[in-house]
Length: 369
Image (cartoon, rainbow, N blue to C red; front, side, top):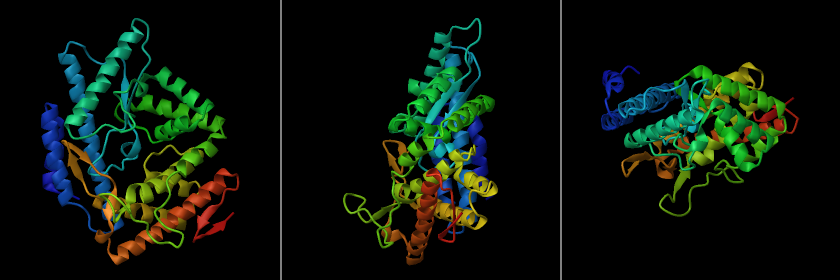
């Protein structure tokens, strides 16, 4: 996709001087990306997703820079130690739609001799809050679950993060397991990537040392069910303003990407995007090539439907509930959706057997040891 208008707008991101200018640019980028929405084949959807998430990453990185500059203008100085700004959720997986909220964290190096740890902590907590406010002004709503750098629980030094990870692995109740799954999607969008990689190393060492964690993660992963009934029929929303729509986000996309994520975590795979995880699962022999191909096709289709979901601007913030009216789905699209949901079901069943110690690969709808 080589669109001159889009290229020019992307080039402007690095020169935006404040949050209001960033918002204006984000609005113009949003409109241009809407005009370029792909119509069909998986390759164009994958390319569009890559460009769209490159746009989000660039806007977020600029928000970080603007927030650093605001700290300096306020007389707070430069960052006292190296740090990384982390994205989780769809941002961590590089799968944000046109409308996306903030799922973020801030990781900074432990202060060395001569630095007051409390002053360093206060500096980064103020920065984390500024970044969130800047992104809000740019149209990104905060995460409903408060997984965000303005929350002190998600803004910490390296030693604080590793202590949290240790605690979550050692005491894997529901909320701690949810946090661990969130962390598995984390990636550095700005700052010191080596620092983020060290934290990821600690995560996977813990995962390897706590084999029982997989069963707890499975319980969380299987929480959301694909939107098909007992006889393979689609299950639309029955009540409320979304009656007659199908929940693509929680009825297709989330059950699928969550299953792929857990297969990746149990296999020690560190990639965060769903496509990268599928390909690594194939390359490491955890998925047959034909099944990986089916998974890629399902993922591309779910991405396309998520892009069809209504984008809303509520109070200046972009929002998307992930639901698509059944009337927007042609008969072939409904048929394809049922087909790809079958892939999701087989993947989830395979994952359940894997966690139970009977690892098998899905293959043409059947099993193979």
